[in-house]
Image: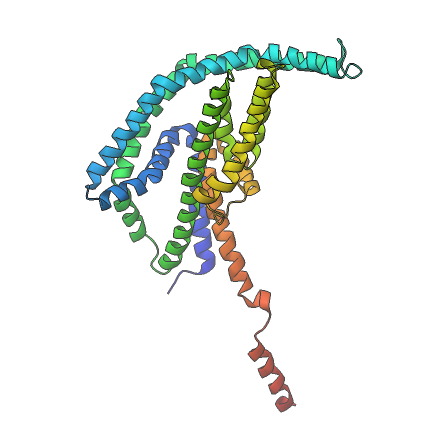
Length: 365
């Protein structure tokens, strides 16, 4: 005799609540393991491709790890120091940017902004706050002993977890599949396959889009001569996963810096603005349709809500799991909607049932 549906819902609800409680209590402790699992999940198709080319799973995993290590070493030697230097310099000139904004507003709108106005004082305070808080943040991140230890743990633990998870990914999935309830195994496999397709399409595709746009913005802005092109490109690339937001934030920041650096050189300022217009066209018409696709099913508003909610509840760990959970919830909700549309609750009684009832009534009379 099968377990009643109500009892099953209670059991699986308790399991889900227990997992959320563990995630909430452990917090940063599980961060390296979640990051390692995420890296292994992203790289598993690459390992499968290398296996199909004739490599063993061990050799494929070692090859991927060596290539990843090479990329990290090159980035640490060439890009990261320059990025930190430009970030610190940008924070340092924040008050000057605020003063120049005040000067532009004073020249263009003297009736709205005077020397003692609230707007002027607010801009000055904003620049000083960015300088002080930004400097404090950089110093805390780079100088705190706890931060150094956490970063060291991430550097050591994440690659180890990623290596072993990537090496044992397929056997681990097979063992999980063997533990599924036999009655619901086909449905769970179908839902899991759809969730995997959604998550993989979004994470891998959007990761490629963010990386491509970040490199595009950084390289083109540096070629134009913008002083903080690498920082602007990195910021715009990171937030590209939200449609239009990356281009807007990066464009406003880049044009503002261009006005500060190239004031009077309107061609250079126009080139900076044109870079973000071209980048938005490249992203919307070429990269996103090809790398992500139009049928992923994660609406930007739904994704932003998931990131905000899980980030507020579980911190950075919550933001890492927000996309898979949002994708899973989206798939389950779509399945529930389709089941509802196929049910009598939506369609009403079947025509045959109505006809049978109408035929029976005269005979009963």
